[in-house]
Amino acid sequence: MNVRLRALISFLSVGAIVFALLSFQTLQKEPWRPDQLLNPEELAITINDPQNHQPLILCVGPAATIKNSIDIGAAHDKENLDKLKKKLNTIPKDEDIVLYCGCCPFNKCPNIRPAFELLNKMKFENHKLLNLPHNLKVDWIDHGYPVNN
Amino acid sequence: MKLLLLLLFTLFVSTSFSQIRDLEIGNQAPEIKLTNPEGDTIRLSSFKGKVVLIDFWATWCAPCIAEQSELVALYKKYKHLSFTSGMGFEIFGVSLDNKKDSWLSQIKKKKITWTQVSDLKYWNSPIAKTYNIQALPFNLLIDKNGVIIAKNLHSIELEEKLAEIKID
Image 1 (cartoon, rainbow over the protein chains, first blue to last red):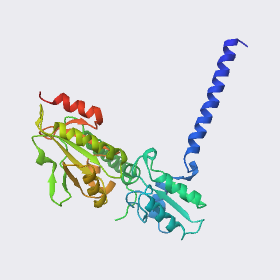
Image 2 (image 1 turned 180 degrees about the horizontal axis):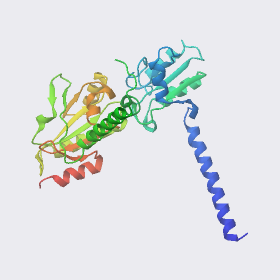
Image 3 (image 1 turned 90 degrees about the horizontal axis):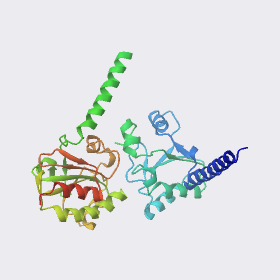
Image 4 (image 1 turned 135 degrees about the vertical axis):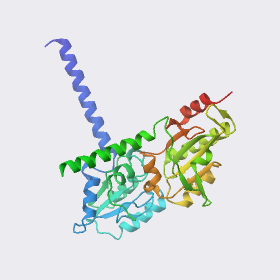
């Protein structure tokens, strides 16, 4: 095999391994798994049909805007995180729980990570994070999904 | 039925695009009529004659809080100056907060002296819809007639724009 071709293949292989490792690290950085991100449309459909089994929806951001959600308060604040812990202590570990904030884009949100980490730590089994990558307005309100009055 | 759906879709798309187009540079900024912390109703149009920065922010938005300190310095520097498009510079702070206490506390903490208004409705605020706000912080710079002259400028870019339109 041509030396140049061999060098190119080696270079591309190393590049692919580095890329895979970096991607894995990025995925590992978040406290939630990709399958724990809940599609907003799915939750909206569930809320809109009372016949469906309703999850416990907890707002860990500035305001409980989503219909039927419970206001915990911004989870970056220790006082609110304690409030969340207190609430969770009363709930079975296999309860379906949906967490959301929606104040800011995911990468800037100070609330979702401490809250989700707490649920992981408390060994909850069926908790999900509502996938609001932009914010609550863009990913929920603007779609006409149900909100609290 | 298909025709009706197509018509509704076209209407929706054209309404959305027209709303976005309305906020382009050169267009009139939509009126804002909200209450200040004292409960008085304040209109954006009451600042006619001045260059005005409409600053959309909230106390739950970390980058907005960081920006308030920069705005305090900018306001002090440019407040009494004259511009090619207005006499004096004002900031019209529109908060998307939902808790009055947090809002008032940050105004005090950051020593904000410009006009602040809010309906305390968070992302549900109709003004967020009118101004098609996709993320915070968001701002518009308008001239003496309420015409948009710049959009979403922050930090050094905002100061450069003010320096550019200032009369020496």
